[in-house]
Length: 183
Image 1: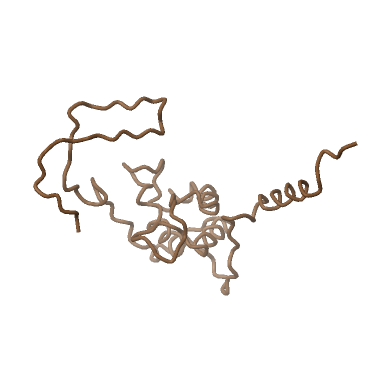
Image 2 (image 1 turned 30 degrees about the vertical axis):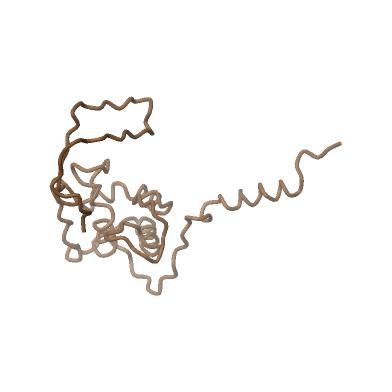
């Protein structure tokens, strides 16, 4: 009688199962040993992280589905924030970690993720209001500044809903004042 699984196959399945356990895997973060047992608070420890890495999208009029601008906003979503930051689902940042950093990179450090986790585990305390940093200033309109040039197609293009992954390249005729590359 033939065995349905080889020992190598069982070992492979076991290795995958161990890698997928909670607290392990590529994105798992171990909480650093804290030298001080000071309580983590929103005003001193969490607000700076949220204001820097989350509030640019999580504010009225932007892509985040709910605002994260006040203690009440963040506390309401504390457990969800802990999960999505621990799994690195949020903040969304696709470039791999490397020595070269992008300007205003929203990636969270392992220590920041561990701090969020500790804050949630401690019941998400608010802290001293005098420790709260200034809320982030929101930029109205274009986040990167007004574009140098806006173009309109001669006829509107309606993207078919069934082809969600396709992109349309358009040729735009016209005379240009300059053809030199931007600095």
